[in-house]
Image (tube, rainbow, N blue to C red; front, side, top):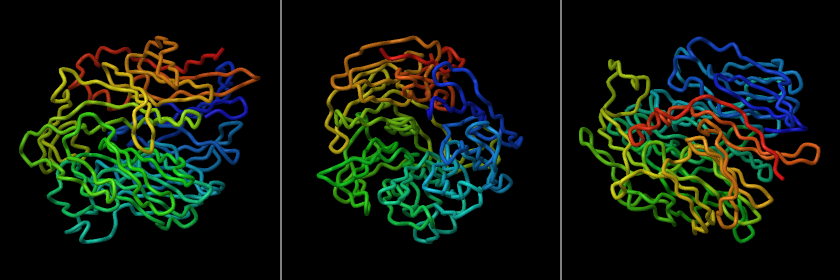
Length: 474
């Protein structure tokens, strides 16, 4: 985030930096004192950004806190512990909490773990808790036999605050165990759902459950894009399943559903009028099954970008499947994944059935209909976010460390740079003293490349290291 010539960013283990946006010179650095247990959880090190406002820099920490720093000095103003790491081991904040007026809100990780997810809100000036929203609905029909107590359902990505309607839109994750639903029969509300919440009270205004009884790890946690359709505001919402939902911003009424993924076999479709799944293919315990898309999704969590000038939405895609053998969790297992509640005996990411190799894409589409304007294919699916500018450019990067600039209207490649390490974050554009800058963070990290090694053995040979690289646009 860049404000008044200062760039604020976060690195591994919640280290926050403020640097001169024109030179990269460090102005201050905040290194938190994290609870030792935070370095042992599955999502350790993951930090997806900061929020800046009200004279503060806000951080969600890996030991379950919201923290406010002084924007000018980086000194800690307040810190509020929100999760109990003894009873909610692994419930942490990997994404930045968001501002909605004087309320700071955000959800934890934990959709793949045996506890019940929550969304928290505190006063942005004092850190005092304001409300908590329980993602797991207290409903025996939705969660029979008390299965909701270990049902997952986190909100691990940032939500969207719409000032016009004074509404928080935030998506939730899959239910747990991810691929084994025999112990949680029901629709499992409010997992795999887009929620509309009152920021002052946390009261639910409306919800749209996109994947009822999710047994594919198809979170609905991604960004909610607000655009115009016939003069009214609608929300465009992609989830891991490979479908994009278009819904009325005021009540969640479905306007359209369109297919984003090219390789799809988990369902024959979704009814664009009702949202009902059409002949969903749920994994049979003990049986090896090929399911597309894979558990990382038809796109990773890194966001797309909408350009009002072209009317196009630019987003990456990942055409990779997984072979899964589902089954009940064994709490005595000592496997590396035993900290999670995945409901699997085996999992491996593999190419799509009709392709010799998996691949990725960058698509330019009409966000309301999915109509494709142009597309670029990559041998390895990019795991970075996308930036588009008013000047008609699109910037992104790939796992091999290549940075690209494309013409936003036709997809023509205009520029390329080798950064020396894979790109996992997102570019930013800003101006200082009349000069436009493009800054891109590099450094291939997180668990996604590890999962992808089944489909891409060469990932282990990709260079490591991390840097913040700045360019001027001329």
